[in-house]
Image (cartoon, rainbow over all chains, first blue to last red; front, side):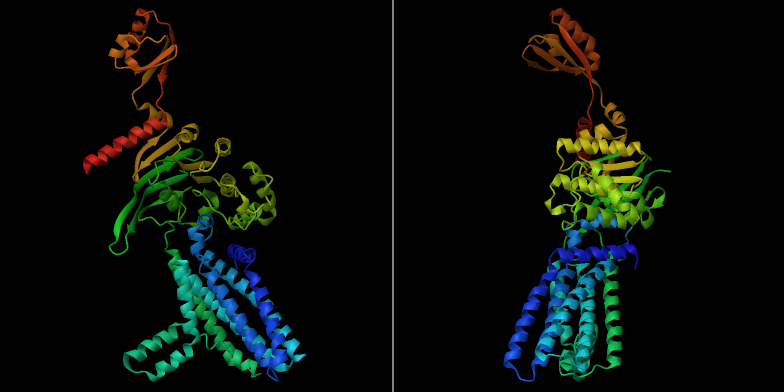
Length: 258
Length: 313
């Protein structure tokens, strides 16, 4: 990574930390410890299932909310507040600014997810008293959640490069919801005919396929995740994020900062 | 080689939502700035000053024309290491301290890490903020932020500094300090290009100025050249409250304050005016040429250009 990108990324991370974004970890810790204690008392034999399901879903939702709410303002806020003027009047290329912002936000989310993952494993240890081999698949589920974050970050940045924070939030949330049900959309496309089939297939492939990245249910049951799925999901998420980021860069390169 | 060479730079925006209409922000502008001079870019609000600066900084893309800074095209990112820019009413990341902000900008400008702390310390001292390096910018006043803005513009020792309304938000003392700083930059061989609508600042500082109005360049030259183009007058002061009738007949603008009277009249009436005072046995105090201020020149120039624009319409 070149030094300017690293510099912008670290400043983005610092902004998130100083704006107390990581305080969400307190809410997460309270939620998870409360759930672990409650589950330990009321469920029989399904404590792990409940803790993994609840814990990973919370990691995903907290991260998505942060990714969208920070991501949508990353570019538009800098334009609105004119902080961008003193950055782009230096030897910083516009694409470096976007990529730096992306890495800064992605870094924030990874750090956030890391601390949450510690919380999930602590809760797991609390209810099961020991770790078992299938618990390692929780790490794969966490990895997939991080891939989701990368895709959402890049989409939020894409929207932020041309629209207002409010519209960007609407677009990003809509895509997240549609993407979560993209498997159903693909099934519907397979059953449809004519123009509807063409349209739904196009939409199904255009929206991010978050359902393929959601293995929370299966790892909660101790089921393994195939190596091929890990590989394909990695390639898919990286390609999707890169394309969304390139789209954002192309728009931003042509934008007049009035 | 010119420090700044503007070759027909122009900007037209499309305004409106449904039926987009073109709005000319800057008509083709041709302007050269010599190396080492302090150049003032004058004009009322909305004249096109900030648009020009933003195009030079690569923040807004021109609709036509081009520009070179130190011989390099403005689209070449390498030139950005040689320039410093203070935007109008700057806003900075307020979660950072002054030290952190300047270190951030220093790194983006390519200043080597090991020199940064010393550089930041020196530049903060230079803009009069030596004791607030560790204070978050959200606690800074408007004037302090303006000083930080100036600090970030000169931090990386650029050859050309662009200031957009640098005196805005500063108290008289602060304005004086910025003036001194600009003169110091000139002594160091740097070129200073600054936009302002405060004409006394331009008059006190600039080697040359350009006047822009309604997106069009109206005049370029040294302040003395521009102001001398307006016909000279004299101010004559005498003791007493009597104004000789002959003086009134010359079309003098006069005012009597206490025991002193003064009149402003055309230079060629000077001898006749002195004779009139002698006849009335009034004691002459002084005769001084009335120098046209840049402000007077500016107002007259803009009035004339508005008339001609109105006449043409």
